[in-house]
Image (cartoon, rainbow, N blue to C red):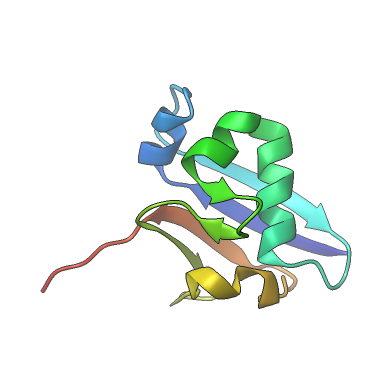
Amino acid sequence: MVEISVKVHYVLAQLMGMEANHVVRELSFSDGATVCDLMDALAEEFGERFYEVVFDPEEKQLIGNLSVIMRNTVCYPNRLCEKVLQQDDKIVIGPTYTGG
């Protein structure tokens, strides 16, 4: 089992109809679980709105201009299912920041 922490940015929390500034969850997964497994677990907790706002389960990609930060690195949106969760990972799901 791997234990991880995930933070959903407050903008996404509000889009999902939550009143919290942000959402933090401590979750456990079987060894070998991926970021896609995390997305499915979050959708199970937050309902279909999560799939509408954050993650497309058929394409296995983030919706819109969102990013996943894992181990202080932005994950490639089309490779989320390749990223294996590790013990004590701290993951942030939020909008992509750009600019200079």
